[in-house]
View 1 (tube, rainbow, N blue to C red):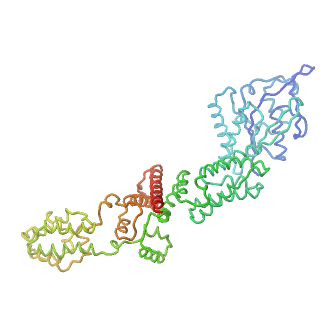
View 2: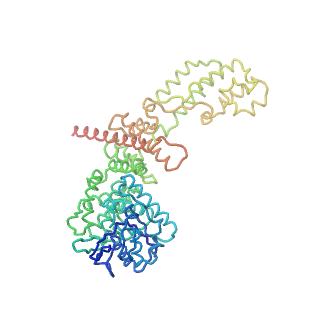
View 3: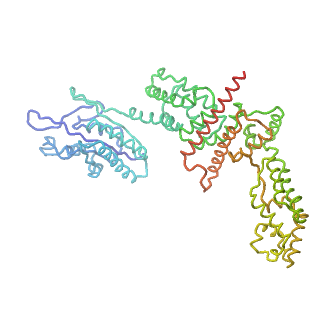
Amino acid sequence: MGQHIVLTFLSTVRTETPDNGMVEAQETSYSNVSGETTRTTNESALRYLMEKLGGGKVARIFVFASEKVRKEGFVSAELGGKKVTHLEYFRERMRKFIPYMDECMPEEAIYRYEEDATVEESLRSVAKMAKWIQEFKRGFKEDVKLHVDLTGGMRSVNVMMLDVARLLEYSGVSRGHLLYSKYDPAKRSGTVEELGNIYELFQLISGAEEFVRFGSAKVLRDFYKERSKSDQLRRLLDAMEGFAEEIKLCHYGQLKDAIVELHDAVRDFDAEASEDVQELLLGRLVDRIREEYHQLIALRDLDDLRVIRWCLKHGYMQQALTLYTERIPEYIGEHGLIRQTESESKRLEKSVQRDGMGRNKWFYLLNEYESKIDRIDKYINKYFSLIKDNAFPSIRKKKFDMEAWWQEMESFLKKHSMACKDEQQLKAQLALLDDLHRDSGPLLNLSDSALEPIRPILAELERDLSATDDADQRLKRVDYFLLNEVRNESLREMMPMPYFCDDMVRQYPKVVKTHKVILDGIFTPAIEEGAFLSIMDKYVRLKNERNHSNHARNDMGEFPSAEKLQQFMEEGLDEVERAVKACSSVEGEKV
């Protein structure tokens, strides 16, 4: 059943002095308040509420009371000539209808409000009253419903009272009746009106704003849950809910359908065709939705760049990252930035058909496809052959020429767009081996720091080398190992590796894989290669950021803030957009 509390702003009592000279409270008859006529401004709303509650008890009446209400008053004939303040008269009068008045309206429920308060002081009063009610609510486990009497006080008080109700609604206090006693002074009669529909406009506006700013339809769904809906309204709400759901889940196929549905529902919604006031009001808000969603739903299709930009603008960072990662490869492929020969295209299609994850061919090409450089290890094998079959034998015969040998190695590396990861280390190893063939003495002490460059090689032979104290014998064991036993795979662990490297790789180190695929002729960018690799560089970095956040790693990703990430993503989108336009204009000129 729950608890009921009331918030009211007390007005001064209207009085009159009849012929008998006694001061009396003015009587007013309210058409929807039964029983005797009322005597105070706030009495009508409270008595109306008690009738609505059907005998239900009010747990607390919270009151805003000005200094005039608290301290000024009159000699009341009704109370036998007793002098009372306006506040005291209200409490005495209401005891007739609420016998437990002193219990439900104690002094601690009366907030002393000054009518000449500044706007800032009024807002402070709103916050304090909301805090009082929140603290009172904590004493109950069941639902607490707040009823508000908007009748008394200055005109600006209505805004204050609504502010309190709104604050409390967000704190879990349910809203009950919102009342206003409409009074006709000429007839000295009135009617207590329910203003719930006017208050609910706030919720309607909040729902539209929530959808505009965050793409969520929860508030609107709750608002219309118990209300009758026309076919066009139901269609609009379903479309908004459908879009809200799919933008959260990022189901691309369903998102495409949701955008089409939203486009059609917004386009066809005609508020003027309805006589329902809430639908008419929503019609004014739909104009804002049309404006804010224009780029997204202006066309009856799904454009990846528009959707990603919408996500960024509305704070859906993870959705933007996901869509960027999953859709940009297909976007640039479908918009002609990638060109393939017929044979390479068929080979790609066959690879995609074997892909168990069912990925789009452009995504597969730019993320999974292996170039010949990746697939064939012959270049790395050749690199180690130049060491094992050329350098080592020359060193053993004491005919090693470092300068000539390095020229040959450098020529090989350059030809295949490769470089040594640590040229200095490799030269130091070979130079030390060459020196040991002139003086093997350092091998007498295997822990000698002078042997550090070849420590990985010595570690492999530790047991054999420890079996003899003769330096020449140790050198022979090393030679035999390097010339006859060691495999290229083992040398990879002992000596610096080569790596693929050219000017493009140095500029865009994140997209070596893509660059290799281009070099292999698997595809050709329709734009300048550097521009294409710049697009892919941003793509790979954003993909890494998405993976970083998805795996909830403790270390910080590349982007220290959402603002930096959003800015980088927008730069990437701009770059893709420029490239597509440039490509389209070139194709147009050819035609």
